[in-house]
Image (cartoon, rainbow, N blue to C red; front, side, top):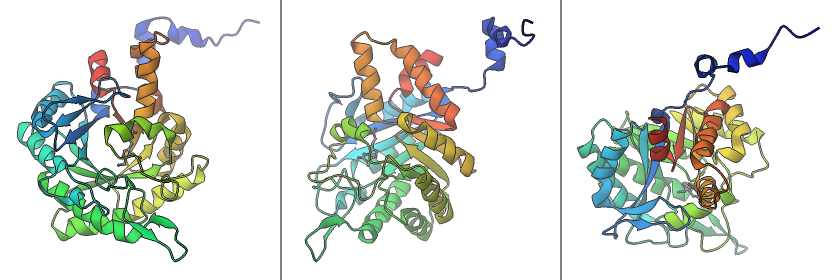
Amino acid sequence: MFPTKRPRRLRRTAAIRSLVRETSLDPADFILPLFFSETLTSPHPIGSMPGVSQLPVGEAANQARLAKEHGLGGVILFGLPKTKDATGSSAYDPNGPVPRAVAAMKDAVPELLVMTDVCVDEYTDHGHCGILKTSARGEVDVDNDATLEVLARAAVVHARAGADIVAPSDMMDGRVAALRRALDGESFTDTAILSYAVKYASGFYGPFREAADCAPKFGDRASYQMDPANARESLREARLDEDEGADLLMVKPALPYLDIVSKVREASPLPLGAYNVSGEYAMVKAAAAAGMIDERRVVLEILTSIRRAGADFILTYHAVDAARWLG
Ligand code: PBG
């Protein structure tokens, strides 16, 4: 008896496939990460991320127009400051590269969604995501509560410059509550918080650390970022940040953690993002350059898989290319 049910019927033509497609991909789903330097006067290509450059703040308005032209969902800004110190104090300099770039982008394209990454690793001379403390036994670690104050000050500076959304990426406990309190205290009650709620201690950040000049000078980030072996813990992190007042959540990296994206999607009603990080990008670019894969096809498949797992939006260095391909 030949089966009466034939799934291939729904794959026969492009029109039928389009009708029954479960997951959509739109440029508005993509957030483009940008690196603004206080010292550069022209773009500086990042070796491990072909197609991505550190940019002078003077490029911000052009980037805003580019993002709008491609219909992107928004941008997220990282900063390369002129000076670094032990506490990352340049992170809350109102004349730093991020606040200046935010203001320039909002002036150029007021309706563009501008997010900022809030973390001190780009601003500390040791490269860790917080202020360090030494225990009585001589062990050095990041001081959670002392770091919260710097993060809160940076978030307020970003909000004052015009950021729509601030995105803490440091993985300190209690930072969402600290940011909310500080923002509300300065009357930035409408500035939303996108929490990098579920961020793993990942080797996939390698190229970014060149891009943002923030590799830790000693040790690693395992005492604050999550253990890649843990899944249940993602729900705990997501719930805590939700309770502290996060408006949106993020899982990072994306591709090696699609199971986590899916879990968090089911557990939380908040809008969910996923960060298709630098190492994921670099692998695709290297394989494509070596002629091993079809870049366009692979990128669109990866982005679709992240959306299919449950992400509403994707932070991705492929944003402009993917928007072009979809257009
Ligand atoms: C921390 C931060 C990192 C990334 C985004 N925010 C680096 C880290 O945690 O070490 C990584 C992004 C990427 O790899 O694309 N400010």
